[in-house]
Image (cartoon, rainbow, N blue to C red; front, top):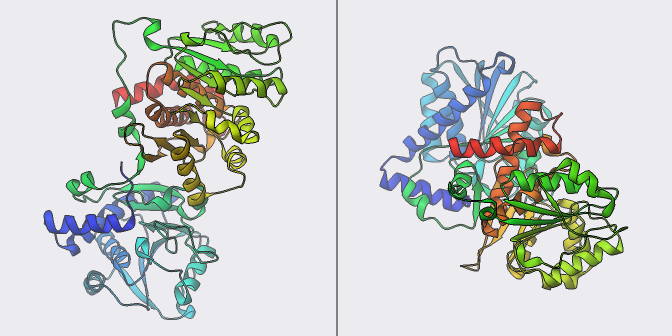
Length: 516
């Protein structure tokens, strides 16, 4: 799914109005009805139902959405959203569609309307209320000040559940937040048709809450031809890239992967990564581990072969027969020893095939900046936030971190996976020379557990061994990893999830994609 700027979405609105055709007021009605239905779905469990639902509406079309939502809900029998209240912010110049919807409301006595002209007009809110934020949406182009800023502070302090329509008010759609400017802190955000870029950064999660994309029927022709380098990598994107496994085949058909990982104290990382590589579908796997870990790996994974090494080796040795392997994964649990550094350097000097670097391989890369030039084109790097900070030399978050990520992908022609609640993969497209960004739609908080990253390295290495291009294997592997985590969380609960559960649910993740 494409991710468009706020201006592109406005262009889509205009195109839809002209070519469906439909009036702007009717398009607003369609969007409001879709959001109101989503509200009903979230309120149906009796424990979730509010005593009151309070719509806070600015003077623009986002406010018009709120007015139309309240009016539509007033017509629904058995409405679980309690008393319906509309609070109109008395500032700014109303848009025509806002004015039209405001004129309709008096016909619906179930909806009360209050004008907010000063802080004295702000209602007292409780935890039993739901607040629907329709103050500004995605049209904001300057920091919120004055009465609106005070109102946002009042809403945030209320303890009420806040649902933001389109974009939490105060948060710019396409640029970083303004310093010290107030932003609504939503429980949920309903993105209209497409997620806006600002909704997808972990740094903005306190404002966005749970994200729901609400289709509103914008014209597919415009969406198809709109240009972007940002994509929401969801189930449909994963299904489009997943290949059929040939019926007539043998283990060599699906590639031979090489994994170099583990130290005497962190052999578990190697075992986790190796298991995921096999479950991801690699036909053959050879694992290089310290001498002391060979028996443990053989017992844990009899399906894997062991690379040769010598008595006393603290890390794996780089095999001499590299041409036999189709992909190489390097780094999980490798450690900070001098032999580990030597192994990373040797791999970068001698290996030119598909490569995944993770964990300590990234830490050694950060300590040796000259090694960046040795990365083979299409190489996949999988840093978590602290590893990324070491790679770039400073802690970065949000849009600033994403911009640096894209710059590195372009400069070194590599694929970067910056792990987080919403993992972002920047992909260097070898055909076009462009960098595309994929925001991952799968995954859950239960995956914030030791070894989860090691499993991801194994999954991507397994896909590369099967012949998936790096620019496909990187975002697809991230989605499969997250989907396995979602299925594991359903079976175990997020709190009880451990890294092995991800590997055990990879088969279910594949079935989920293939069977729909």
